[in-house]
Amino acid sequence: MKKIILILLIFTFTFCKQTQELTWEVKFQKGQTQESVPINQIIQMVNGETFLFAVHPDKDAYCYIICYDSSREIMVLHDQLIPGGQEKIFGAFQIEDPPGTETIYLIMSLERQNNLESLIQNFHNNLESRQASNNLYREILSLQNSVSRLGEPASSYVPGAGTARGASQQHVTRFSGSNLYVRAITIRH
Image 1 (cartoon, helix red, strand yellow):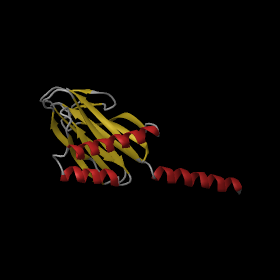
Image 2 (tube, helix red, strand yellow):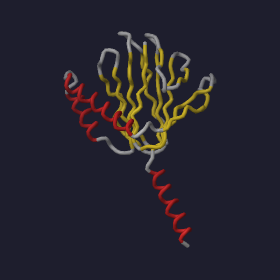
Image 3 (cartoon, one colour):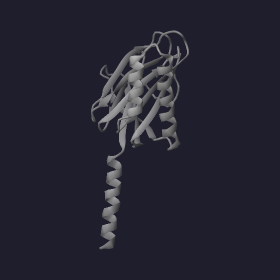
Image 4 (cartoon, one colour):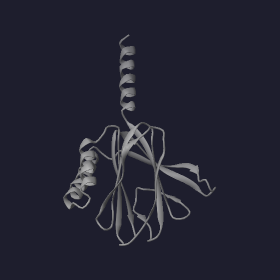
């Protein structure tokens, strides 16, 4: 009897832990051919080239997407809930001068990030304020540091469906094992 209770407790704990974890995917495509590329390395692009990416959470998730561009300017691309099971496409964005590095921060969370949302609102209300921009950027880095101290959540680069044009197979990067993610996508041009 004790063994059965122990097995049930372990099963319940495992099930509860899995229901609290978020699994999500991001697919990054670049160029006219929408070539699928992995996001775990620096993505090389040229001025004028376009890209888009899609985010697909398994559960309702708060999604915050902030771009820090080569001009050291911040743009908030998204700061809302994405319903579980739905894919949200962002772009097409075009790479423009000045040359340098663009960093797109994808923040995915099962819980609302109140401090981040407050700083995003302050940023929107004060677009010309360098202080509001700096505060938002520091919060992103702080979230990234707090998540990385817990260990990088698992990710895998997996084959997905082919493109609508029948071109080569597309790939996605899948993340699982945590309820908060801060993933940077780096583009160099």
